[in-house]
Length: 264
Image 1 (cartoon, rainbow, N blue to C red):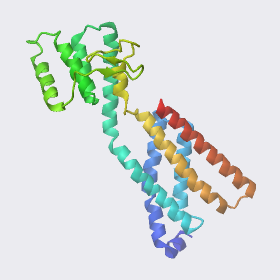
Image 2 (cartoon, rainbow, N blue to C red; image 1 turned 90 degrees about the vertical axis):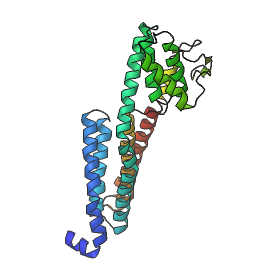
Image 3 (cartoon, one colour; image 1 turned 30 degrees about the vertical axis):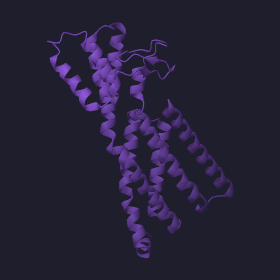
Image 4 (cartoon, rainbow, N blue to C red; image 1 turned 180 degrees about the vertical axis):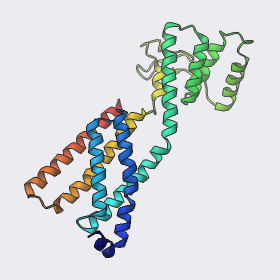
């Protein structure tokens, strides 16, 4: 049977076999994320099942059009996933920075006059791209620290001022209440929110949320393939309609759930 398919359409057969490479990688990745509890088990199992189903359709399609479409979707998924995987290391570093920043803020809540810790906070803000806020906080902290003991830190701040090209003396608007705060302050004087850590979080997506987005996209793409293939299955019409409605409903639920988590 497989030999006959290969002889009838060798290009489709070779592409179908080749697409099992990214499918196998995706299955292993989903299983790892489930074990680490970074995605929920239901979505993970559904994602694994749909990847395997896509692999089956790629090598054993009910007609050539579905085979080509399945292979195209699999390789398009690889193209979209590649940038995510390339940035995985950077996201891990971002997650570490955010974790350190939260620990520094925890200490500053009990020791607000710990100016060495304030400087550490400024270094983390600089890594998160808040250049003006970091320079203002570091400059204010160094004013309360002995220059002889913190000579290197003074040089670092001077370098920031020369290279960043930002107006670090401007007021900083609180994202919660909109009030402008003096540069170098850790909390908003009006609403008392720790607005700097909130600004540092902007543009940062936790890795587990990113992985849920990837899983959700796998579910949606896989269900799209399945919905298209169901009419060719040897099943009663009522069962076909029920399966299509079930898959579409589950796909929409998964996507909405993930988007809500992404918004926070």
